[in-house]
Image (cartoon, helix red, strand yellow):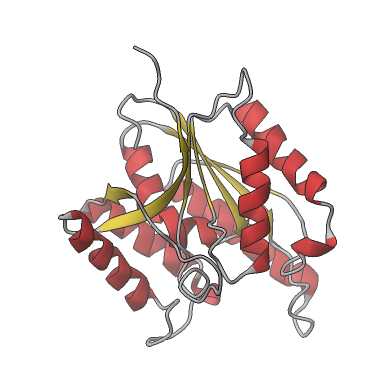
Length: 229
């Protein structure tokens, strides 16, 4: 977290549940510190699952996002880009949605996906977020961090995820993350799937051990600008 609170932080996620899988504990720590948490979810559609009732699934996923946002004391905005088909949309359209959110909420810290992910939606989200937060004069964003998502990041075939920023998590923050994952139960899988609740919590313990603490979430540093004294 930023050492100076309160600040506004923004999580930009391709799908509802990605923000919790990648940074749920960190967002809980921000909320506990008094920071303003904002969520931008780019898709709640079910276009990649033709057997599903599209409207019903979209409504269910949107409801889950709002319930999870309440756990983080967060404001949430939900876009409607097509699930697993971000490559069918102009990159500019996605970038502009993110730019608008940045302009409205003025975050100092932005969390999003890693380009290491197997999911094309995740990689496009990462690239569009980088474009929307490029360090032009007047940009409020000082730190951009990329999270890891179980069943996407570790299965990537390109450059590996290389974290350099570790956020220690209290037991309280882990508890909030666990409750959020329960709200996203339809997106989770049973053990020993890598996107099971057990695997997610085990990953938090592993990252904690790597950082010398009980539990942590790990991030790649996309950009961090030191504020002048």
